[in-house]
Image 1: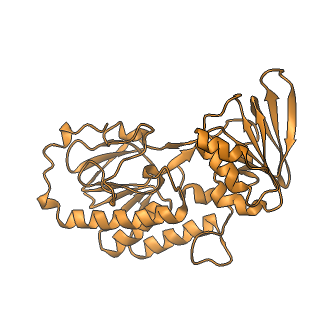
Image 2: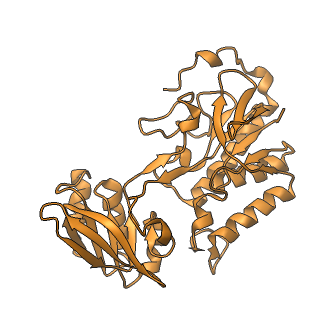
Image 3: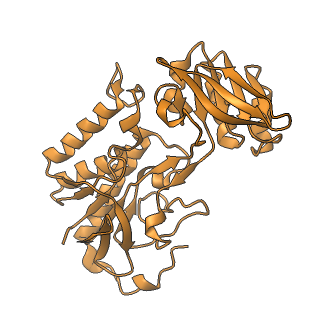
Length: 320
């Protein structure tokens, strides 16, 4: 039986692994379906402290993994396909074929950005297609970009990108935006933002150097056109990767794990959540790493004092 199993190898999971390994908790880290998280498919990372000249995303995640391994963290390929958290110790199913028993769990499986699902989109992530304006906006100084989406996040990112881009075009498939009135007003009053509503994206256009345009269809006329652009930011929301938990943990209405304020504790003793799976606001590598540290410290305290906990009522807890 393991003392602690960490699910996910993004900044949160690897930070938790470093701290728990240094505390001699011998963590087992399950890599998940995307080892390294979203940073593993990111090119240049310039906003992570300690790297004045920036660092490649895969290199940063590789270094964090080596640091965790140096202190004794064990890594295992695969992903948790189901979890039985109704009794203690907990039982995790790996790849539907193997069961792992553990005294505690740190959930850092992240949240996946929703994509449009159109040709050329996935092929050009990191080559002009992005899902994070805060992460990548700096690279578009003096350039033209497109934001796809009509909610608050899209409006916020559109305004943010005007700090760098000369033109920000908002593309939305409806005539009306879903964003709150105040967010719409801020965006509409920004002279750098132009609007292409009632337009459905149908293809990302790219050459050997990356994105050069977005093909859209006018929903009223059916006419297709290509908007020239240097970058496309998809801002249609995120989906926390919590389906495998089968509602055993308390979440909000969108599936993000809810934690006790100021901690990483979930409603289940011995189960902790960190990183983007419980953060729908910031979604930055550095904030994820910070909550990974918090989860490790919370988990360490739990393991040292687990005799004080009553697990008899676990099966009665309702996640939602």
